[in-house]
Length: 312
Image (cartoon, rainbow, N blue to C red; front, side, top):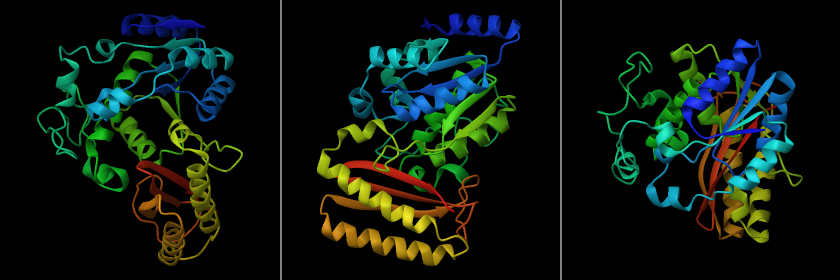
């Protein structure tokens, strides 16, 4: 496995592979790899000639304290990547991804206030990619001002910006994302169409641990009792996701009641959001079925988590 640290080297590596007729599968990450990431890498390995993993903690999608506290385990990540058959690991510096002459603190200042507003002078608007002089992406309100984005719209601007940049550098044939981050996936899929990249975004089903929780680096911050609470939340969501053909409004009411009862019993639990949505448009769904998903955001002892279940 080759370890690449600069954008120019990554672009050259990709050009060489494409000239040889190879397809490139790409898995972008912020590191702290777990079995969910491994499932993406294994899928890419089976479908593409070459596999690229990126490890980059993106400052544009965090407030400064959260960015500084984000866990980093690059050596462990590279070991896992090698075991998964990755051909090239892209581990860029901040300046490789954002070569615009800004200091790190200036990037954080692009989002002002605890939850916005987004800096309109620096982000593109709805026509993303039509103005190449704009370095940063602004996600349209129709996709961002809902679910997690209602409180943190700048977070998804940062996600879209870094993925746009990584796509330009890696130039993959296919890019692999897990269905766990449902809003992120809808935004990236839409942006990919706006940009007309020709890159195929592959949605990979959620990888779940043996206890039913979707794999996440954040789960390592829970103690055993707190994890048990998260398991109960997931079990309740799963039960309600299987009511195919039922009105979403009635299922949501039942789901909210069940979660409220659990929060009364477990004082560490706070339920933040409960929604049934169309995974593509993120609009509210009216009926439980294949074109809907249940999304629940919740807080356990100050740690915010989210679970998504595709309905059956």
